[in-house]
Amino acid sequence: MTTVIEPERRQNPPTRHRRPAFDKKSLPARYTGQMLYFMGAALIAGAVVHYPIDPSLYAIICGVGAVVFLLGTIVNEFVLADERPAVGQAFSLVAFSLLLSFGVGMVGGGIQHFEQFPERSAWMTPIGLLMSYVAFVAKDSKGRWRHLVSPFAAVVVVISALTWLGMITLAGAIGSGGGHDHGSTTGTPAKPDQAPAESAPPSKAPAEPAQDGHSHSH
Image (tube, rainbow, N blue to C red):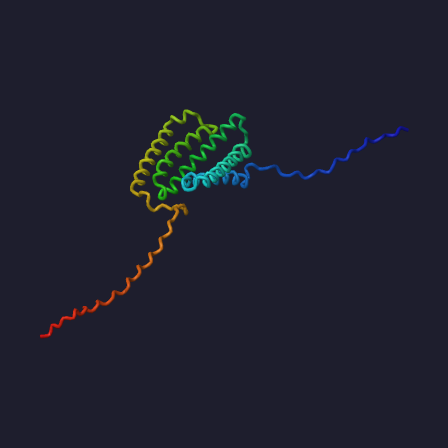
């Protein structure tokens, strides 16, 4: 009588709970990417406008804004994107994203602080508009250099020229008065009032006429 040997049964290891994969399309991920974009542009906008007031301070703020904007570019274009760009395309993407951040910052800062810095904002706003369009064409995956000579590019140039003309006219009317300086002016302490002049000593009574010893009686 032959004995049938049953094959050894292998027990499957208990399944472990896997962590859910990172959702690139989730609301927190998209919020983080957009928040970095707008926060970086806002910091650059304020720093570009207020730079003459305190160059060392606002240069640091501008640098921080540029770093924040670049982080937003990395999050949106590399982490959250479905396809990551090549190495050469990645460098141009970062460079033109930085240029785009300065263009957007110049437009936003020039409009926001036009009343305080009219002449500076008059040339900063149209230049930022042109800079932002060129940077976006170079940065966008569907952008081509022919878009810089397209009808839409002509519209951007016309809007920039009209913006400069209108703002420089208003700047001449507003003048430089009424601007806020954020404590940059150095006030001159008021001179103390001069002490009242010392009163002159009282004048002496006129001396009585001296008698000359001659009698005028008749």
